[in-house]
Length: 426
Image 1 (cartoon, rainbow, N blue to C red):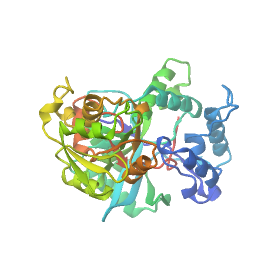
Image 2: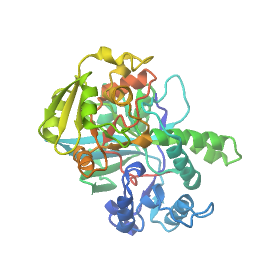
Image 3: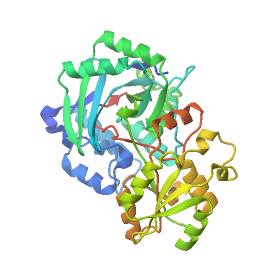
Image 4: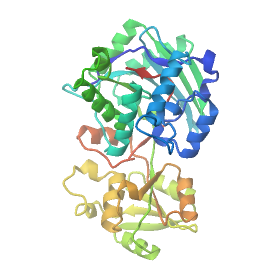
């Protein structure tokens, strides 16, 4: 269930900042250092200065990446590089991209969602870490805004909301229409009260699941609770009780989920022959002639708990679990649906039980590109890489409905919403 409402969003003023494709950025958590530098160079108004500002050796409690983000934000609002809409709206948001031979146009909407928990609530599916949450909390305390939306799936079997969104997008000119990293991003303002009320009514009874943005969701709740215990202005406290969300219908044909492949850093001195010997007790181990062959074979075995493995020097393997019974001794006190997740089998069974590898996040690198993962091994940065098939949307919903959470980076919904389309200023 989601209690949603329209809002007066803050958007870029293209008459001043110019090309809007130069001021947007990916979400903060997928911006490496080299990309951060490039985004800084692209435009003096790029949102990276708010979302992921640079750190300096001279940083202090009064001058740091968070206080500078606030100063940039205040300056851009004052000088009209950013402007606040005069009328409340829901923002229809489309991302059009290619997946193999298919072209997908994922249409959703951005609105505010109440943080109050009723009979039903938005369900998470991944665990979170304290350090990233404190980083986002420090930023929110300064800018007092949701700079980018969390990504939430909703159920609507009649597709009524999607029909409303498509009707809006076909009848109005988008206020933003840009290509960014090969993806076409468009957005429209839906301010028709009758259509908004219809969407609100459907969302009040819809099942909702967090696809991406678990840290930001929890941080917004922390921030709201924190403000509730202060003498902050009533309007600020009320506004902080909502989080900005990008809602997308949970249609399999409109969603692309990529796997995050794993590269363990410390494998405890294991030799390659020992790795193969240990895995051979529980998996059928087959050689694959190339990365593409391995990935193709894994895809054909997507329902059989198959994994890829690369040991360098062209040595690719496909691992297929022999018997599910082998998991019972290693994975206990969990529902069957959770035990059968490939990410669970990789972390708790392969890493911990079979290979005795620490699977803490500081010991595992997550990479979405199979080719990049293999290159890391070839360059000697890692001894081994493990590859997974993508988690299915139905599995995400099932695990969330059971009140369970997957290992981190169990899903990578692609593409991620771009930061800079609209901001929710408290």
